[in-house]
Amino acid sequence: MGQAVHSGIVKGDAMTGNIRGGTAAEIVESVRELVERGSLAAGQTLPPVRGLAEKLGVNRNTVVSAYRTLAQAGIVVSRGRAGTSVASQHAHAQEGYSQGAVLRDVGTGNPDPALIPGFTAVLRRIAERPVLYGEPVIDPNLEQWAAQWMSDAVPQTARARLTVTGGAVDAVERLLAGALTRDDAVALEDPCFLASIQTVRLGGYRAVPVRVDKQGITVDGLRSAIEAGVRAVVLTPRAQNPTGVSLSAERASELRALLAEHPYLFIIEDDHFSLLSDQTYHSVIPTDHQRWAVVRSVSKFLGPDMCLAVVASDGPTADRLALRLSPGTTWVSHLLQRLAHALLTDADSTATIERARAHYAQRNTEFRSLLATRDLACESRDGMNLWVDVGTSGQAVAEQLMRRGWLARTGDEFVLADESARRHLRLTVHDLGASDAQRLADDVAAARDVAVARGMIEQ
Image (tube, rainbow, N blue to C red):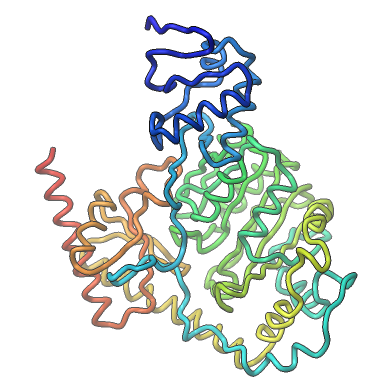
């Protein structure tokens, strides 16, 4: 294209944005400066490693090192075969209420506060004595209870080790950090849970999407990811967020057969909905698999502020995880562990959890019926939310819903590569009364019709 190269400067190429440098540090500083000045915009693709190395006259590994440092700093995002692009400097999408919103928020993903067990009755008896340095990282009573809780998810011949972390996201982050190095590829469900996307990207790993259908992650998708060199896979066996689908017994069996051929691929199963799920747990971890972990948190039924998850894993994985949970410093508070155990073994609290499970299932079923009568498809069968196919741009529908007083999550926030997810909204409706549910269903249908009509006019 007649581009000139002089003194380490690439001229006349908008994609490179005049990146310069003869060392990794100089390339990092050049890209950082270009981003800060706005010469490289969010989403703009950086040149391929080999191409930039040739234009700058440096070794390929120099550019690899520079891109790795930029990814670690959050300046760029590695998207595998899609290349490396400038990261958005805006806040990433997070679960929870939208701060300062005056609209009715139906995209929160939050549990119903009225269905979270109260703590007052059990607080006095859990604080009998202080916990000192050198004591076990996991409270013995919680460990005994958790061993039974995790038994259905552990491979039959495995000798599982238990660990407690500060929630499921903390667990996945620590597990990946103990097993991977930067630039390693991780298979993620597509569409994907927001926290999983951010954990992988901020950890400097490469996300490889695996499509999700009505039975869970697809076998062909996971096979392609394995062929692409992934070293770990993070998946949700039931109540997948955002789709609400759960692995069928048949699909889990097919995935186990595939994964049995790769015994050292690290498998992480995140069973975030656990005690609230109506679906049977079907694990994909093969018998005698070498590297695996099952994560179950308590946040959906004891509240998001109960930052606690139990991890069952193989021995070496548990050892690596333990190194990151030092007694007295980075362990999970024993007061929190005792509180969780007390609530999970208290008759009134467990009855509240049962009511919550029935409540979420009933409200979601009722709203699916409302959507069906308005020709809106929703295949979600489990979970806190509904994944609604609006048949057109979810963003366009969400904009119309805002005019009607609603704030919804669009599928765009959960997409890795599956463009069909952009036709969806993720709605949290279990806290709506009957009249509000009717109104929301009417408004979604009306917003869909307006978005379709406008799209036809623009075409």
